[in-house]
Length: 89
Length: 196
Image (cartoon, rainbow over the protein chains, first blue to last red):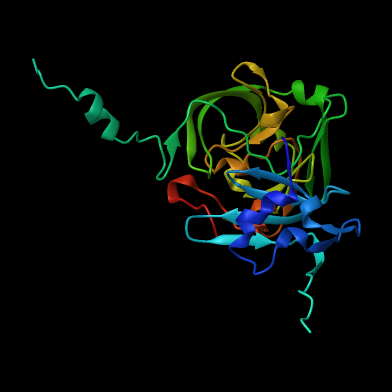
């Protein structure tokens, strides 16, 4: 099965997060790699999206959507780093 | 003699009673995966059943020497498609469990590639489940789970784990991969047990 890169998460996750998830960095709790989610491997099918670490292939996150609900799991992520906008002076 | 026929439009409004609620008939075979397709050589393949008292193990050659059954069944995917009258060949779980003694009532299926799914043992026995290695008269394509997959037609098809490598007995029902991430712990298509 072919995978997409993490940039493909931007649309589906924009509904749920106030920041751009694809530029956030996440730490894989399998291999310890810290990388932007845009660099992850995304396996999408009608069942849902499975996000895998670009370094070791472990599952980082899942997205399952029904008509009225969504389930977002981060089972393989220990921490997410979100960049703040620079303070204006 | 009646001149009244059901006709094309009347027939299309009629529901096929083999289709569970919310399902649509398809004639292709969609591929759903949670990751890359594992490349499993039958020379390296093995299947295990692990219980509280030990492990039962079959190589591919040992597995192929077991009683092999032809199975014709309908399958239902949680993503709303169903296929009717699909043809499989495989080994019944009754055959594999014939010499297995266990008091544990729940099963976690494990696959090459790391996928897992949970099923109660009594829904795998009495002619309800197989380890299938042929579909439509051909060796099971790797995209569809070859060399061998679990086949549990009475439950949504995510329970029919592709690339299956073993069954682990459990005291309690615990969620597998999709069941941890939004899908129903049980998955009966006739009750539309799709999500949590």
